[in-house]
Length: 230
View 1 (cartoon, rainbow, N blue to C red):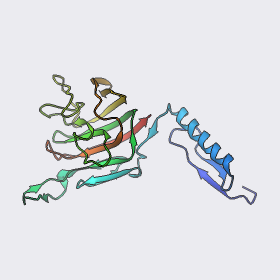
View 2: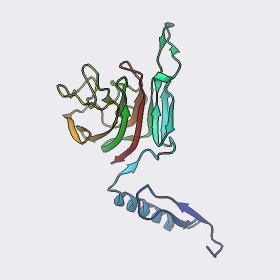
View 3: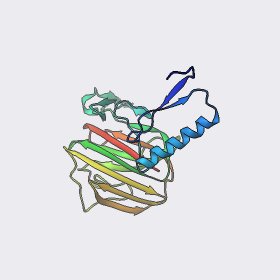
View 4: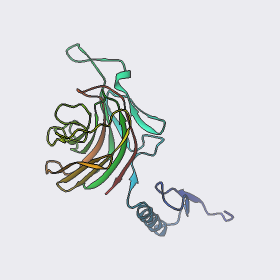
């Protein structure tokens, strides 16, 4: 730059053709319009998909509960089984568990994520979590990640809709999950195969939460390539 104008950098979502755009810091409303248009172009260039995880930080997410989350090798990771046990109200030792909750709420959307767990993993992707309520199957749709769950194995919505008699084998490897929530129509795919296609009107909007640990196991869980399209 050769003039005296102050410039600020605008970074578009990953995958956009132009990596860095510069705009005058005091450019007025025209600059704001340009930024909005650039965001529109960025979404259009990626088919409307936006990253919810940048691969480096937990920006946009907040931990809930006692599970310790970290960014490790480009993944959102937690392993409650490696944490010290905690004392419950009755004095009994319990394993850590918790969530990583999105800072934003979403209503109608398509969500994709890659995940890796083990046979003793109890995880899931909770969607449309009601504001101001504890994260649970009573306040969200809990799309389960727990291959050996007795009644609602991986891909099921716990307490509501099950994939049984079909059971997914996802433990010990990277798998993909796709969730489409459009009005009451919810479709879940695991590794590209539709495992659940249901109608349900209980929850309409809310945060997304990633689970680590629960009654069915404290094993490790990793997430990557978490993306959403509204």
